[in-house]
Length: 291
Ligand code: FAD
View 1 (cartoon, helix red, strand yellow):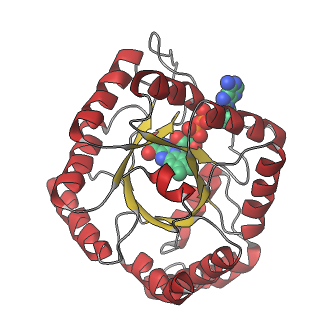
View 2 (cartoon, helix red, strand yellow; view 1 turned 90 degrees about the vertical axis):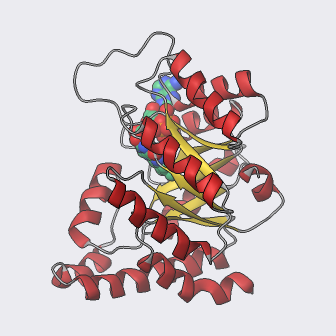
View 3 (cartoon, helix red, strand yellow; view 1 turned 135 degrees about the vertical axis):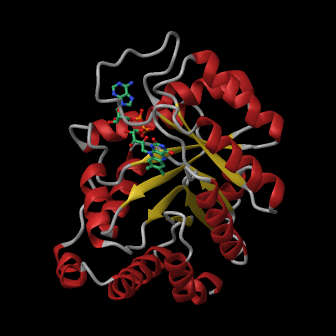
């Protein structure tokens, strides 16, 4: 099932993102999480990819297991920065031969050390989108990342939109956003996209907070603003996981209800391979989904 086509038809998408665990025990826990979230009948689930290609085999294995062992539609993330053109084509051919039809085409974070792009590789995500379209036509639905508050390397939103548009023109058919905690950033971003003639569905990425210090770290790395009022609610309970979960879920439910009311095409949950927070948020919004 191609995600872009479903979204185009107006299907409201619910999706869950996982990362490929490092150990067999971690993988078993992940499959328990997947089984408990499967009952919610998500539109799709996705599996992340290490920027340096470090998770190549693990991502492929988890994608293949989900595809074969469950009835879920799965999207494989693929980052291009550390791969040669031939390696990228090989990975994509493997997915095609497995029957996978959805790819999230990413550049990945730039490696910190002296870095030389592999010969014939891609420097940016739009080049990976073009590579996919040139070699696989419409077999894959191709999603790309977007950044309502701007990517940390983008000097301003004009730059952000200019290069986001390049990914759309290269043939991506939907986008998932970086996590954000203030919906106004998402709505302002949509307005900029509309003005720039970008019309693909842009699905908000939601991170239910379960660990205050961890989310502070993630947010500062990816440039997402945590509102001061939320920091003040969470900080006193930084060492209290149950209270943090309660506040995090309450906040995510309010955030999602506002997004649904304002007509978003779907919701993509960053699960961190755990089901509890996502299940609780779903419980809080399911009435609005059916309305
Ligand atoms: P790009 O779209 O290529 O953009 C990167 C920067 O370069 C931006 O500032 C852009 O404006 C600029 N730019 C783009 N094209 C040009 C050009 N031609 N000339 C000059 N500047 C240009 N990372 C992982 O490692 N694995 C994952 O699985 C993963 N999944 C993600 C899922 C989602 C939904 C999101 C939002 C992010 C994910 N990331 C993942 C993080 C992502 O890889 C990083 O944010 C990375 O730094 C940028 O990737 P990109 O695909 O957005 O890059």
